[in-house]
Length: 217
Ligand code: SF4
Image (cartoon, rainbow, N blue to C red; front, side, top):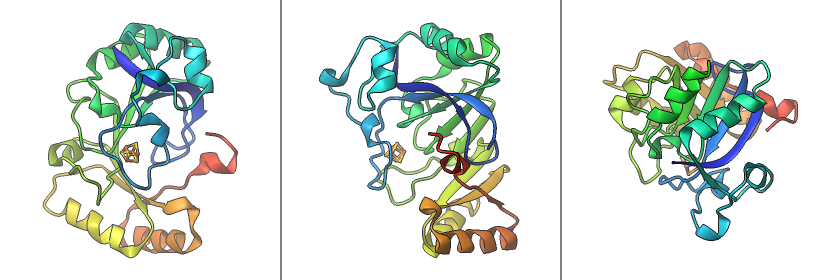
């Protein structure tokens, strides 16, 4: 069974796949516990917040539901319109074993993208088409070296120069071959200027939260 927090059709706003229509599958639960988390509603796994219909999950942020992987893939199909991608996010989606769900999503013709903090391996062996690791440096759980090395994208939220120093330390000695994206925290102007100059200097890519400009989730 998969614990689900939300399901909706979106336009990916961030990172290398920005602008792509995706069915966003927000999984419930996270073992990382970042102080700055903007999806804390996914943390609580109390039975009192558990519901039994998709509609309740889609309208009440803190509610969650357990679904069979196939049932969830079918629900994603029903809202996809022309979207070719499904996005697994959270919470921390890799805290759950994703292999069966990804298998069904592939069977229904989706390409599957994953956004993870890189602290868990529930996606390993699932065959995700795009893995974006967004490291939460300074949180209690370490980012796993092997997860980074097999990722396509490393997206770092940057609020201050020290965040880039920590990212460089993470990459040092790593065999990561993908694209590094810097994303200014909360579209802060100072952080944005710093990200622009760092991307220009390092040949990295700038990620902006474009969905916020168009009032999308
Ligand atoms: Fe929130 Fe993501 Fe950190 Fe989990 S890993 S606490 S969902 S920011």
